[in-house]
Amino acid sequence: MLFNSFVFIGFLLITFFLYYLPILKKYQVQVLISASLFFYSYQQPSLLFLLLFSALINIVFSFLVLNGQRHLMKIYATIGVIINVLILFFFKYTSLVAKLFFAENDSIGSFFLNIPLPIGISFYTFQGISLMIDVFRNGNFNNIRNNSSSFIDYGKHVLLFKSFFPQLIAGPIVKAHDFIPQIKSKSFDGINWEFVFRCLITGYFLKMVVADNLKDFTYWISFPFFQGYSSLTLLTMLFGYSCQIFADFAGYSLIAIGLANLFGYHFFNNFDFPYFSRSFKEFWRRWHISLSSFLKEYLYIPLGGNRLGNLRTNLNLLLVMIIGGFWHGADWSYAIWGLFHGLALVVEKLIMDNVKIKGNKVISIFKILLTFCLVTFAWILFKLPNFAHVIEFFKCLYNNFGQTPNYQLITYTLIYSFPVFLYHLYHYLKLKKYLTDNYDFILFGIMLFLIITNSGSTGSFIYFQF
Image (cartoon, rainbow, N blue to C red):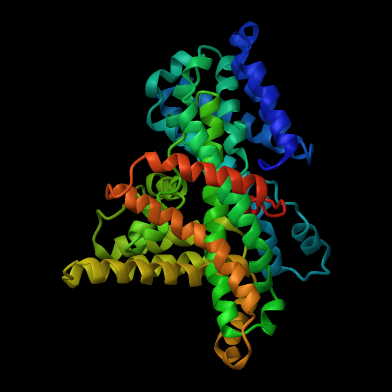
């Protein structure tokens, strides 16, 4: 069920009405759980069993960690984390193993290659890992025991944490110690309507007007279509895809944050104008913040972080980024994408440690442009998961200079990419106090008008495939 569909609007209105109905106030958790399970199973009911199984595993083992004997806590937590990883590996990565070790016409290889990828599994599995680690580290964080006096009550809270529909499919990745303490009775009067309005209008604008229109033009950098276009056209479409993937995912995150707030739950911001980053380090503080903070908190720091010398720090960076790349998909292109970002972070760190660069506006602008261009070129690994196609794309980019550019395609790509740069620029001008909130009413009015009049054809969110 897509956020940008009329079916979802009907579903949301019914859920919202029941959630705040006074007679059902004691059952708000149950209402959200029921709605979330319906939301997840709407198109593929069979996938609901996997979500429930994953939730049950996490409920049982985290409850054992909370209430078991101290010398067994680590064992229970470890088993819980391993099962989460195995579930994710089986459904997401066995196809990669099959490609490496089995022929396509082999019965075993064919079985593994045809295992379906359940939507949202990467996100709710990471949340399960977060739960196991959090209850082991801080079993009583923010009075979690007060929310879990019995196994049934505790199970309801964990099931809501695992299945909450605004972020179930594509994040943001919510950590247990941030979400579970928020589970309590909510009041209609507590809704911050202005915040909800801003999130939803901006999110739907980025998705429906920017990303959904751009997808029809960036489609042509798919294989084999890109082979027939000039270098200038390919370059424009690649930068258009960079804007599309930002608008698509940032739009989803803003919609999820706004929807969660409607039901009294607060999510942290997932994007902080990343294309204004002056370095890869800054980029990862601004892009998909919930994933980068998850990898930092649950992987980078436990590996030793930057506490064990420069060599170990660099190895940790590379390993974490490669794993982050593989998290996105079971193809070598994603691993190479992660390796590229890891190497960029390592090289950047070496330069910063050994070269003193005086900062000024010209240098800052150069850094922003360089970071944006490098990040953009790396996105081709997302658009073309088959690495052979990536190589072919760069060959065409080099060889097709003599071809006549497709000016119509270039023009439309630039038109629908422009709002992404305007979105970043508007934030910068407000940050520098050149603009006030008075301009927001004009901007949001324009965005609402364009959502109604100029939305692209409905398309699923890019991160659904991860």
